[in-house]
Image 1: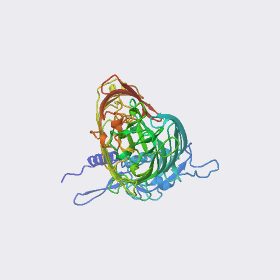
Image 2: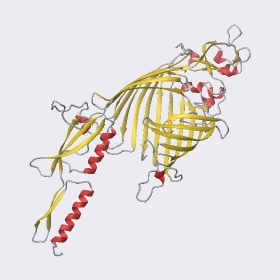
Image 3: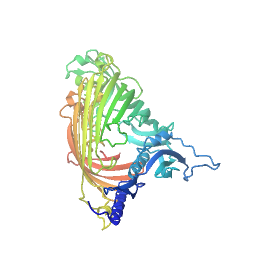
Image 4: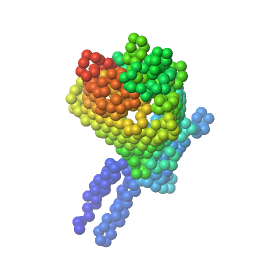
Length: 550
C-alpha cells in the first residue's frame, strides 16, 4: 500500500544479497525489479547459483594436474571415496559453508595432504558451476617400530606394517608384531571405515590374532605370584580347602607337581564387528550415538614360558618350609580344569553403544562421553564357559579458568583466548554373571585405572567400580598439568572369582590414589608422566603413559 521508492528497494535488495552471502550462498545474485504488476506487486529475479556436478582431479605435490609428459596425474584413491564425502549434489544450490564442512570431512579421512577447490562455470548456463576438487594424496603406507615396557610383556620390541588406503578404497590394513621378555603378539587387522553404498556410514572391522602374555591378576608387587603346576592328584579339588597339599606325590595326598614358571595365557582368535552411527540414514549428519555389534571367538590356553599347557597354578607366598601349602592355594587357571580341561573356547556376542558430545575427542574441555556394553559368551563345548560381561563408563567435562599460568589464559584486549582447561569426572562400572574363567576377571590398578597401584595390584573382582576427578590446565604451549584423585573397588567380589587369586595374593580390593602429572604434546600424541600415592601414604608410584587417561 506504500508508494514504491526505487532507492529504498535497491537498498533492500542489497540487504537481501548480504543475507544470502552470510548464509553461505556466495553465488546468489538478485536483480530487479523485473516487473511491477498493475496491482503494485514487485517481482525480483533470484539466481541462487546451482551445482552441475562434482569432479575429482588429482594433483602432484607441486599442485600440478599433469606430469612432465603432459599426462594427467593418476591418483591411487578411487574417485568415489572423495565424492561420497561431499554432501552437495548435482542440482543443489551452491553453499560455501556446506562445502567447507565437506572439505573438513575430506581432511578428516587422513588420506589427503591438500584439497584445492575450483568453481568452473558451465558454458551457456549462467550461475551454474562444476565443483572441481584438486586432490593431493598423502603417503598412506608405513613401516614403524619401537621399544617399550609393560608389566605383562616386560621389555618389548614392536614392528608394524600398515596401509590406510588399501586398494584406493580407504581400507585400513595392518600387520603388527610385538615380542617381549614374557610374551608377544601378532595380529592382522582390517577396517573399512564406510561400507560402500551404505547410507548409514556403517564401518566394518576385523582382526585375527595370536597373543601370549603374563596375566597381572596372578601377580602382585609385594605378595608373591602364582606359579605353574603341571599335575595334581585326582582328589585335590575335592579336599578341604585348609588341608595340606603336598608338593611331591611321594609325601602324601592330595599332591601337586610344581613346574615353577610364571603363568602365561596364550590366546588365538578373531573378532568381527560393525559400527553404525545413529544418523537416521544421513551420512553427513553428526550423530552423537553409535551402535557396535560384534563377535569374538578365541581359544585361551594357560601355559608356561616353554609353551607347555599348564592349567593349574599355586601361590608362591604360602609354601611352608617343606614346600607344601594349603589346598586352597592351588587353583584352576583353565575353566573346568578339574575335569581335565587344558584350554578353553570362548565365543562372545557383543552389543555396545557410545554417545559423545565432546568438543574435542583428543583434549576435551566440555561435553560428555558415555559407553555402554554387554558381551554374552555362549558355550560351544564342555570346556567352553557361559557368562555375561557388562560394562558402563561415563565422562563429564566442565570448562574452567582457575590457573592462568599459560599466556593464552591471559589474553590481551583483541586477542583470542587459548586456554584448554577443564574439571573432568569419570565413573566406570562392570560385572560378570555366570561361569567366569579366572583370566577374564576385572583388574584394578595401573596407568589407566587407579594410578597409585601397579597393574592389577589393587584388586581382582567379578565386579568393579572406578571413579576419577581430574583438573587439567595448560602450562606452556606443549605442556599441560593435571591434579587428580582415583578410587576403585571390587565391591567385595574378590572371593567370587574362581580360586580367589586376589584374596590369596592379599590384594586390598579397594583403595584411592591422589596424584599429579605433566602431559607433553608430541607428534605421536600426548605423553604423560605422573606420580601417584596409595591411599595418601608415602608409597608413591610413577607412571609413563600415552594419551590422557580418559
